[in-house]
Image (cartoon, rainbow, N blue to C red; front, top):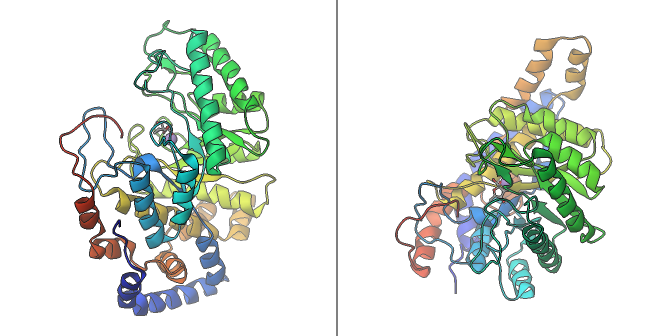
Amino acid sequence: MTFRISDDFLAETNRKFEGVLAEDYDALSRQLARRKIDIEAITRAVMAFGVAIPTWGVGTGGTRFARFPGPGEPRNIFDKLDDCATIQQLVRATPTISPHFPWDAVSDFAELREAAQHRGLGFDAVNSNTFQDQAGQPRSYKFGSLSHVDRAVRAQAITHNIECIEIGRRLGSKALTVWVADGSNFAGQSNLTLALDRYLDSMREIYEALPADWRVFLEHKCFEPAFYSTVISDWGTSFAAALELGPKAQCLVDLGHHAPNVNIEQIVARLVRFGKLAGFHFNDSKYGDDDLDTGSVEPFRLFLVFNELVDAQNRQVAGFAPAYMLDQSHNVTDPIESLMQSAIELQRAYAQALIVDRPALAAAQGVNDALGAHLELKRAFTADVSPILAMARYRAKSAIAPIETYRASGYRTRIAAERPAVTGTSAGIV
Ligand code: LRH
Ligand code: MN
């Protein structure tokens, strides 16, 4: 029987923090009441917030140089479900997982769905993979997949994506995320227009295979692994492709997939405006697609993204239903701790965006009071909403202090004893 943190241990650990939480929550409640903000409304909204865990982020991640596995590495999707269930138990903000195929392939998908449900987990978007060659794969994706010059390679990639839709249907998912690494490393290597045309032709076949209530998420990325051109390199190309494909196609924003200093919150506002925001792969970055923990480098940028999302929510934008997913690589931390903290940083950005005084902001914007408007956002961003986040967890019978509780539980040590150690270093993100 796999070790699980007992609810008694959780309750016992919470007792150490209950008093301080009540005090801090009260103080914040009074502070917000002075700003005519009902703390209970914010806490309810935070309790309803959910983000999907990427199955590929539950094990230790790596780079092209090396990957240094830690103790208790998950061996398969079922170990990953156990770790995701522990994350959900301690933060109650991660009710779904986003699987990746064929990394998470099993022989019995009904059994997988059952195993997830048994642990209180559901499935968000499924991810296809035509950026690696699998053992025994007839044709290589070395020179691309959905945009490959060879029709047979494109057909292989299309078939894989349609298989992912079928798997997702059996798991109860409602969306397919398509990120392709297709591009080139030399000027002249690829016809930039024909490559996009081939991609669109392939995507049309995948689009046709979507069940009526499904969506397909196009994920853009400015570079890597291609270092001269990338077929779906920016939100503009992704948007135009989604528009051409049809209403079920939308654009997924991976925060790490933009050139340095790009105004991502404005991209979000644009995609909302045109009804094409699929959702997010949340992470953080300083240089490239670093896949660092959400909110660990640019928390203000994350807040500004949620400021646009709350603005859209308040305007009741038709069809506004972004999918929230994490997409990170945990190279030097315990992935469970990083994923818990990242979910909390998303809740923090959301709660801060909810306490923005929007009438005051609009009034300042209306009279070009640049600093006044900016300070309305800063006032919300600098508010310490931690008591709200902790109270949301506490009321959801989760951990007031997830990291402390997780460490005190000895979960990692217990799990490491159950799972054979992975020795030696390998390279790559998983
Ligand atoms: C590409 C990406 C994509 C996933 C992969 C693991 O960089 O963000 O979303 O398929 O990471
Ligand atoms: Mn991603």
